[in-house]
Amino acid sequence: MTVVLWFLVVVLIVAGLAGTVLPVVPGAALIFAGILLGAWIGDFNEIGGWTVVLVGVLTLASFACDYLAAALGARRLGASREAVLGAALGTVLGIFTGLWGLLFMPLVGAALGEFLVLRDLSRAGQVGLATGVGLLVGTAVKIAIAFTMVGLFVLALLI
Image 1 (cartoon, rainbow, N blue to C red):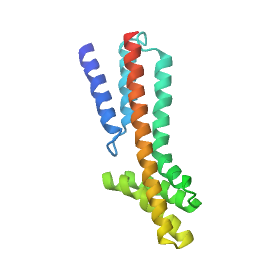
Image 2: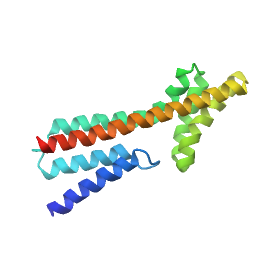
Image 3: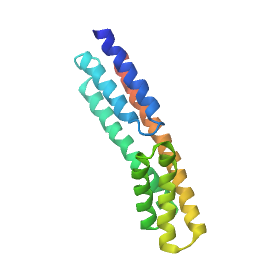
Image 4: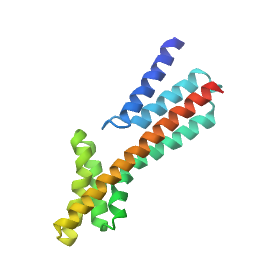
């Protein structure tokens, strides 16, 4: 039975790593579930409670990246409050529309919000592009967080 559980740990972590870049798959949550299961299998001896708490905090940070990356990308360019709100709303709506929605809805939301305020198509396009850059940076941060989570898990097992 232990072998099956450890196999499930590996499956959860690998699916979580894939989910870090795939839409709709909660990557960090799957990695956390795998690490929590691994800790439970070993009665929290090899993987202690502090490691699980730290990985849990990293999981929350990864979720924050999802929601903040697009909005902060727009804000960095000096976008209006409406553009930032549009980027955040586009991110939430994009979750329900698959890959293309996740990729483009935040950009469209930011651009639309900025256009409604300034009526300047060029500026709206710049804000949309900045939102896209924010999403790319956010994805890079989420990947770094995911590998940090896995690294902490492996380190806990080895020490």
